[in-house]
Image (spheres, one colour):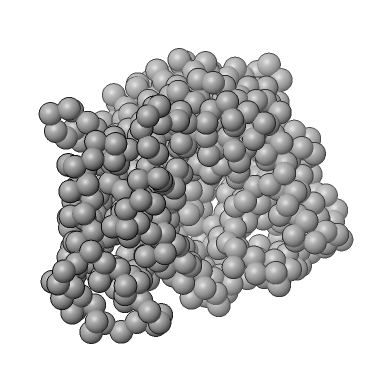
Length: 583
């Protein structure tokens, strides 16, 4: 089964006419003959019929609060019931079940307070900071100011159980009043019920501003970040500063995948499907219509159009050298298309954030670049193929073929990991040439399967042999006289053959080991911002590897990093996973 994030737009109508709205003049009732709930129900059923499941359904616009009280309640009730009915499937895939969620300008919030209360709706509002600019850029369609009514509506959320957060888009006009903005953030934290540790900054770009607003330069973006950091570091808002405030530019956001067309979809009430709120109403990011097209065709169009958008602007050779391609994936395809640029419009800011979050450059960057280009820019991939081994040095694959003991160490069929029923055949990281990531929560079901023959290999006394697990944090430290920067070791676990034999296994020919107790035991020491790493081998094969390193310089040159079968993973508490899903 495939899981997707679905934004649903039940109405294009909006009660406001913000000066930088990406929807331009499209914020009017489209007059669809389909009811708001009808389209969502139809789409979900059509997706489910071909094993595609939305794990998250968020309401966007237009402005969702312009719906009638009845239509709004029906939609929220449907999403609430959908989560309850499909909880086991969604959580079984590693996703957290949340409450219904809306993105809103907050102007007409009061007419839906009962539904928001009854279903613990999570509210994500938008406003302009500093307040002194709000009524300049965020007006009603009749040109009336909106700030005071929005602040009054925020007060209505005080006693409600759901999450309450806001976001603000930053242009140069806002940046020039950063000190005012800082004071207004403090006011919202002090005087309102908003969770300002869950606040979000967004960086505006040159689109539909009518000359009224100016995009920040990359240097101004970095300066803005440092000024905000200086103001709030060490305060009660430090958590938000380190996480949510600039999350749009961090590694967990939507652009942290080669092709976002594999995961994110925006559905309009008339059945049209686009990439996201940025690509909405743009032909280049239109994937099809749920009423007219087959789901497989929509999914294929999504992949093709995002790949085409990246391909149309090319690839910047500097992105191959910086070491952070594994995190940024060159940025949002919509904004790259808009700017006719091959890299992210927030490139410098992202690098600054990565450093602040203690992300190191990718140690396997040349392989990451080659694999990325093979998928997204295949026409130039060969220009970035990693260099071959120096002349006269036998390739690692030849050394492995010639040594039965090494063949066991690198055996791609020796270990299989399952996460909530999804299977991952584990390979050696230095042979795979690309990185593989999964997300694990405290409630995940993670099993390791070890082919029984492996415990017999290269061991004179198999009863004394053990499964050997090495857990590494994503945080980097410097090891050894050579000053190599490597992942920090957390813990090893050795489970003897006799113990594995007593554990039940649902796979013939394999021992089965529940990995979650080990991960929970050391969860507090794992990185929260960077991918952690776990390796699997046996005690006997581990000894073979280090002996081979000591005795064979050609092997040592090519197997300096841990060669054992591995998988990289992000580890989140249930609450952290829920917050990440909500964005």
